[in-house]
Image (cartoon, rainbow, N blue to C red; front, side, top):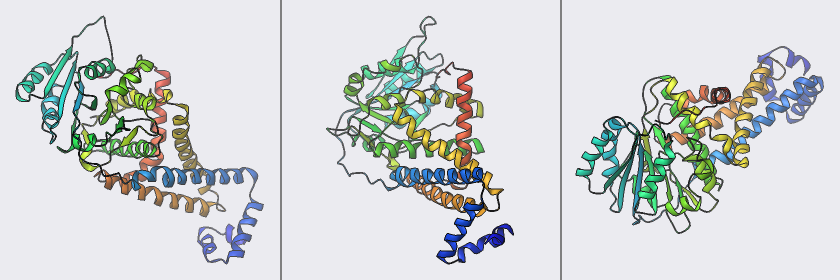
Length: 404
C-alpha cells in the first residue's frame, strides 16, 4: 500500500479496484503516515466539500424542484411603478411593453426623478397614446439631494391600487403576460412576490459573467424564499401590497442609504408566510447590462453596500456558502501537490463540479438562459474573489455610488 501511493498517479487509481477491507486499511495507513498539518487541510477540504454539497442539494435544489401551485388568473387592480432619471431613450424603447400587457385591470406610473434630458417629452407623448398611463415629476433642486427611495415613495403614494408591481426604466417584460403571471400570486396571505430579472445576452466575457452571477443570485434568493427565509428581491421584478409598505414604515430604517429599496425592504418585510415566488418563463424581465467593467463595478458596489444591513441569519447563511466555496477551492489546489491526497482531492472536485453543473444547467433551462454552463466552471471559483475585492474597495471608499 505504501508503494502504491508513492509511485504516482497511475498507481493511485488502483484504489478503485481494491476490496472493501483493503480500502479501509488504505485510508488507515494514509492517515497514520500523514503529518498533522496536511491531515487538518484534508479534513477541512472534506468539511467544505460537504457544506457545498449541502447548499446545492438541500438549498439551491429547491429552485430546480419548485412546482408552483396553479392559481386562477387574477382580477386584482394592479399599479405598475417605474422610477426614471435621465432614461428618455430607454423609456421610449421599453415603456410600450409595460403599457400593452394582456391584462385588463392595471395602470402604469412613471416617476420622473430630476431628469435633465427629454424624459418629460417622452412621458407626455405616452400619456396621449395610453389612457391607463400616468406620470409625475420631481423637480431638480441642488439644495435637496436624494436617492431612488423618494421617487419610489412618491410613486407608491400616487398609485390608485393596493397591489403594486415594480420594474426599472432600463428593463422590459419578456412577454405580455408579465402582469398576469406576477399578479396571480397575490392571495389573502401573500403580501410580497419575488420575480426574476435577467440581463440581455451580448458578446463578451463581461456579459457572460454578469448573466452567470445574475443566474446564481436568482437561484440563491428564490431558493431561500421557497424555504420561508426570503432575504432579498430585485427591483427589476418585484411586487408587494401598498399596505405592507406603510405597515413597514416604508424605507424609514434605511432611508439614508441610496440602495436597499428592494433587498433591504424584502429583508425586513418578508416572513415565512407572506412571501411567494414566480419562476414562470413569461414572468421574467430583461435589463440592459452594464456596457463596461467600470459601470458594472459601480453598480455592484451599490448593491454590496446593503449586505451588511441584512438580518444576522441571512448574513450567516450567505457567508457560509461563500466561505466554504473559497476554502474548498484553495485546499483543492493545495492537495493537488500532495501525491498521497491528490486522488481524494480530484475526486471531491469532480463530484462537486458534476452536482453544480447539473444545477446550473437546470436553472438555465428554467430561465431560458444559454451558453453559461462551460463558463460556470471558471466563474464559480472566481466569483467570491471578485465580489470580495469589490467589498474591500467599498471599505476604503465608503461613499455609496449614486443611482442614475
